[in-house]
Image 1 (tube, helix red, strand yellow):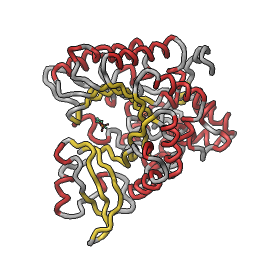
Image 2 (cartoon, rainbow, N blue to C red):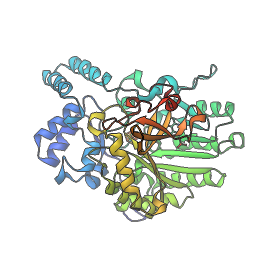
Image 3 (cartoon, rainbow, N blue to C red):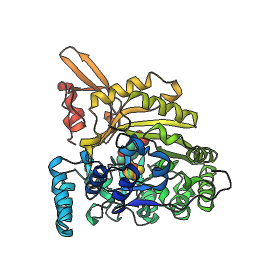
Length: 434
Ligand SMILES: *Cc1c(COP(=O)(O)O)cnc(C)c1O
Ligand code: SF4
């Protein structure tokens, strides 16, 4: 891609055309059938860029990029797979919908009480579509940004992408956000998220960003934009009317004295390897925005220390600051992507020791759980047995932040709700469930 080429038009495959795509690229009708069945339950979409530039089809189904986006039969419990497969084969659309909904309800569609606990309850304001969990940061979910150029199989917001009205969380427009911020002057950070806000055209995105640059909202110091567009559709940032307008918008925000951070989601070093993504990164960095990267640690995609070490080194080389390594949440295809916390801590430690200090800025593994963001610092040998050494990086109760505490070691535990206090002194840290 040269500096003058217009970006291609977005093409993506979803729904019914998935089985044909997988059959065509892999010549494996079993993989195609599995993808077809599982995609009736979990959302699926893949862009032509991911199909043509990221997935190594010759290595399917073991290729990490294949594993990231293409539905696999092991994502569902065998009995659930059989239920949906039978409904699909019956040709009865209603039976299929009922079976799919039943299986979805078993996949914990709303982890961490997202819908009940974090939506601000301001009587005069319909704040549905905002999340305000930690005092300084408000999350904004613009309605038009509640999709992505492709979907990650491990997405914890998968339920939003399934066509069920009761599962949606989004603000209809920027007014809800601006009105809320006018009334909450302790908020310094606004995080535009989704889905992926960069699926929105720049003029629409600007409707959310511009109000944050006004003097009236000058308590907002930081504007973060969470995106995986650089992995799934880097053309979004490349030369062309919309990409150029995006760079100008980011430059305006920087000139207005705001810290602008692009919170980039990279799951595997291959996503940093193509010419389009490298050009996109150079263009973004040129605006004065800060580039940061985060991703969950997931089985089949990035559960080896070398994968993270390589990814962090490549990020630093391309001007990106490694930020968080997350633990896969307790939702969706968790049985497929989940990694025990003990293993996650090992992967982090074995990766971080290989890289320079500039690449050691990633914190983790972190569970974004109901009471807060809990970092698993490692396994400690304590007098009465091994323990997980834990620490809140963020907490609903800010007083808990930064204090070391312990949970009983459990080699199989994958999530916060499986952990128990190690001793009486640790009980206050577990005060709330979730
Ligand atoms: C992670 C998170 C934030 C931001 O936390 P930082 O540590 O500032 O990156 C804000 N709100 C919610 C709900 C979060 O999960
Ligand atoms: S980019 Fe983020 S929101 Fe979109 S599918 Fe992946 S994890 Fe989910």
